[in-house]
Structure formats: C-alpha cells, structure tokens
Image (cartoon, rainbow, N blue to C red):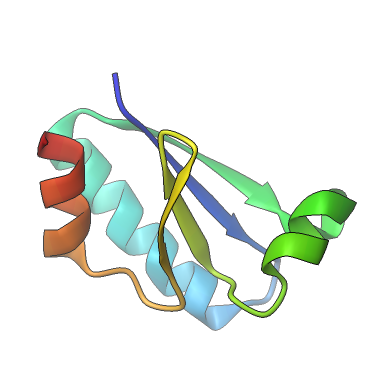
Length: 78
C-alpha cells in the first residue's frame, strides 16, 4: 500500500488545501495518508519550513506548496 505524508503546520491555509487534495486522491486510489507538523519535529522544521506544505509519497518528496491532484494520482498508481 502506498502512503502519502503531508508535512505542514496548524493555521497554514496552503496545508488545508493540500490536505483536501490528499484526502480525495487517497480515497480514490486506496492509498493511506498521514500528517506531520513541523512544529513537533525539529528535523522536519529544519528541512521543510520554507516549503510547507510538503507532500511525500512513500517517504520521497513528491511536491511542495501546491499539490496537483492529477500528478499525485499518477504517482500513486505507478
């Protein structure tokens, strides 16, 4: 099973939009998803604070700032 990880922070409007896309695409493809906050992890903060929201697919960076649903769907179906 494929796993999508959303890395963001509370109060981030782009993170809210990305979450909506991820939820929809994961429901369509059967992938699981999880969310992590840069506020709870110093390593994630150091690595991604300028790029949030960041989307990982199976642990590899897939996208940041804006999530394209077609591109995410294609990545999950490959």
